[in-house]
Image (tube, rainbow, N blue to C red; front, side, top):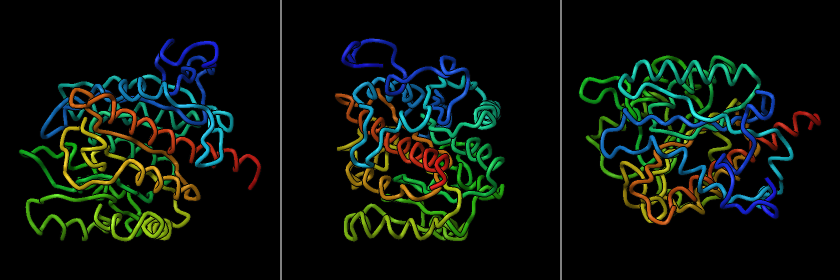
Length: 314
């Protein structure tokens, strides 16, 4: 939508004011899809409203990305696919619904930029992506490990998706890493079990001490040329940069560090991504939603560039 004709605060609030999927004939190279589901949270609820908050904040985005020297929406057809309506009272059914809807979008030829919702949804999204690409490399940006076994006996929560993904053989365990982790744990066993699953860890302190360029180079080497899935929990950012989330932890990344790391991964084979845990009820002046919209924009730009390069044979 041309912001010189329609002010950015007017008109429908699709992601970056892009066309809806039904306006592009039901097909797109990249589908931005919301999953308003937060039944899997263990502390503060509200991430069910995250997708629409990100869409509202994304009105500020412009069509040219100077950091990546690309106009992503000109390089690829990007469309807003609306929301996947998952059962808020039955986690098992919701997981199946998300997977089925993601299967349909991926089968249409799209890559997914999913806006959560809580981190439970990463599991069905990974199942769908692996169905198409086989086991994937994973970069998981988060304050927390999310490889715990159960909460109150429940196997499917926002703290367990990557334990289930490991158990189901969805991950290329030679190329999986957490980025930005920090804060207290239940015990040393959490780290030992996480290591057993093959995860490397880059803490937020590592990013601060070693710098973005060195950390990004390490991540690129770990991923190599494998198909890559990126999952971003917005609480990877310090609460100063993302107060609107369910389980904040002090000492996180800055929004600048997160964006620069993603830009540095532009040569990796990013097949889909998600951004979760934005809870706007705890936000201030859209700080979290703005950071999230820019993060999704950078991820979308990486995918759009790769799609365009694939078409030209580069």
